[in-house]
Length: 100
Image (tube, rainbow, N blue to C red):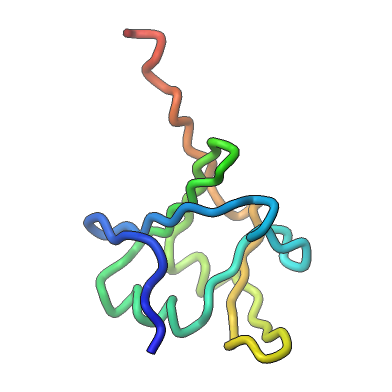
């Protein structure tokens, strides 16, 4: 049984990633196992958020991952679905610092 990676906050699944390790050149973005996506959807998740160790935060709706993602399977790993970084929205986490 696979657990859902990250932390569910409301309808958002938040996961920290190391870009050098988790970025997949094959899809030019990131991937999740199909089972993890199914479990997240069953848990009510609507948005996936990746917090890179570079400080960048990327978001995409679960529906967009399912609609635009690339299905693949490498070696002995479980089936996965990858999504290009270009399909994600970069969140400006520094917004508002001008008003401090």
